[in-house]
Amino acid sequence: MTHEMKGLLLDDCWAPVTSEMGFLELGAEQAAQAFATWQRGLPTSHGFTVEVLPVTGTLEQVLSRLLPLSGGETQRRLFIPTRSAWTAYVTNQWTGTDAASPMSVMARWLSIQCLRVVAVPHTLRGNQGRYGAVMLDLFGPAQPGKINNYVRALEVANDGGHWVFEQSGEPFPFEQVEQYQARRVRDRFTFEMLKDYLLHLGLAPFGEDFYLPPGSCAWLIQKTGPSTTVGREYTLEQARAAHVL
Image 1 (spheres, rainbow, N blue to C red):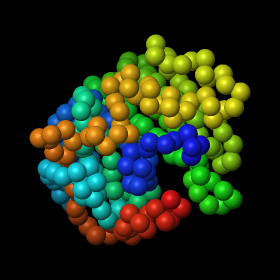
Image 2: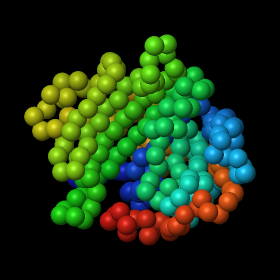
Image 3: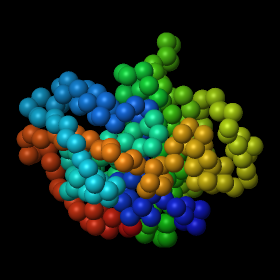
């Protein structure tokens, strides 16, 4: 899958942080403030301080505000404005951003659309490298009678050595549904298809110039409290080495 994933964000230099990202159909500051309000109300946040801070600079300078990466509780989250109605979401977890649960909660709570986007090249050779994955999850407001708030979910992933394709929800009119019958499983939902679908939804998240339009700033949510929750801290280089990047 490596050759099929040319053009990843920042040449994949910020993986695993950017291998998975969340997107909220909401302004960056509004999204950050709402997220902080949610976090402050959680029982697990008692004794912590949750700050919302403006961050300026290039995309890489903004991402560097996540460092060091955390092996314990997530301490820093970024909400990055884009040249669209969507705001990007990434965190400082050393294993990479986990966007599914936060995006599901925010979509339900704020009655908006949220996305989880995953693009990981398949580089596994023996016991070295990463299992490949292309995923797109769209969450919406809560619906009566439904347990979850998935609107549409698509994924192709290497699951421990074999490729699987899964989908749920109703296809959008722009989807290449005939491709889902491809003989080779990994061809049923490709990186190129992911980029095309995202364009139809108003996003171009793999281009650096999609982020931080002139005059805008990102918003950092910083959670501070008992040091016992921090866990081991990692530089980006250490996290990349551990993930064989």
